[in-house]
Length: 282
Image (cartoon, rainbow, N blue to C red; front, top):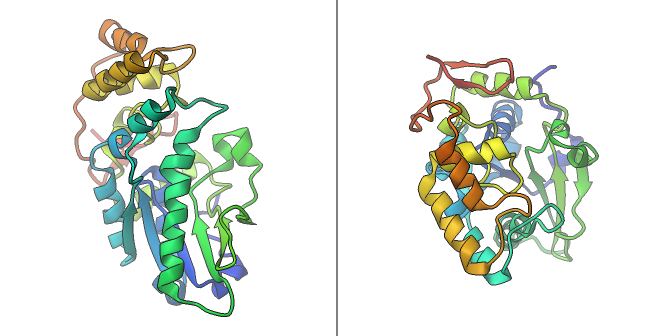
């Protein structure tokens, strides 16, 4: 697949582009293509936004997101939920996020992003019409059936108001994982070292991750796993209906899937094993 970026013609009339950057491989790939192919006038209207997940975030992610934005000379902003992170949410609600109630995404990401849209709208100071803002996300069709059905360019009616028009753009929606890693390598910016051991750079211990990934993450971040287990005991609800954090910790201590190395910075040279995840070259 080609790694060129198709820029919808509607973007040329936008007042601002908000490039959501989690620091992960998909964000890195899409940002590289945008930073190297977009017209200068659009780059001047671009703000790279990192939504800091607080206590759920892997160490070094905000700094990496800032480095990625700086590589293309783009403005960078960080925002996080003012009333606390994931564990605060879980305590407040007395339960953990689940497939039917992924409230972590709405509180830690969606709502924080919408507050930033309000800030940006005020900053733009446009009168007589709504400010036109395009927000770019690194979601891909290959990640899930739900994401495969999402349109690549669509009005976000829930975030749109009389003062602003928010349109969501998925610039790498059709990219394969191999194409994403090819683009990350082309950027020359090493990915986060968590990719040495995990396929995704999400929350440290994500309720939507697979059992093996959770066990590996618990071995990589034992203090965080213990914090989650304490909250699990405090609210009397398991981390997942089918898997408690206590069980995850027990498996991490009992099972031996191979040595888990301490996270180390990744050099520019990467190798991509058969399953498609780039890791540091030996």
